[in-house]
Length: 279
Image (cartoon, rainbow, N blue to C red; front, side):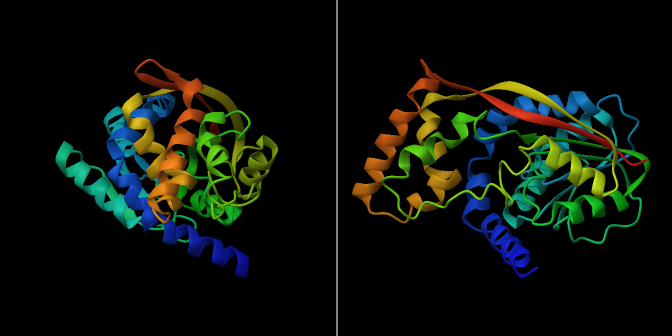
């Protein structure tokens, strides 16, 4: 349990510090890159008879707002990152959306029992330090007959774009954080059998994981700001001297060349569409 608490503390600190602030600063770019998955999730839930929706790991609130518009339901977004929740609230006010946002870790938060009939998440469920406990808590917060829908990344091997920066930069950045394949993180839900077991053990039924792929794009001029501020390279690049920074940026930019098509960066994101029911 000590390791679990330390993992949670580290994750929460990151999303309330440099990582969370970087996502807020890059909100418009990230919204654009990940919109294909927002659209997939909205299309998935559009015809569900949901009245009360919880968006897990809502980030800056784009998906929460989109789901509310599609369903006309009461929507609550929850995230552990104070900067992103603040940005989400500002977005809702700016766009005139009736959604609400909660600063909370849904693994530990005491929701009112059976408060929701739909749980959704776009890339927000892979960071739990105890995923069984987290999904059990979400199950308790869901009415019988309610539904769970989420999108999570598949494996690193199927998502080479996502590791290009760290692979290229590793020889130049000895302090680059190492991925823990068994710990919370971007690819924690890569293994279908593991995810199925987590959901089943936590009380969900009719579990299904469908592979879904989508083409994601960004303008080529946004590529260097993207990898130099976000992800594992972005976490440490601000700590190095200017000469090292310049070498890293040049090396990593060259490594991304296979994804550059004229003025556009293109990559295919390989994910799961996760489905389960509160039965």
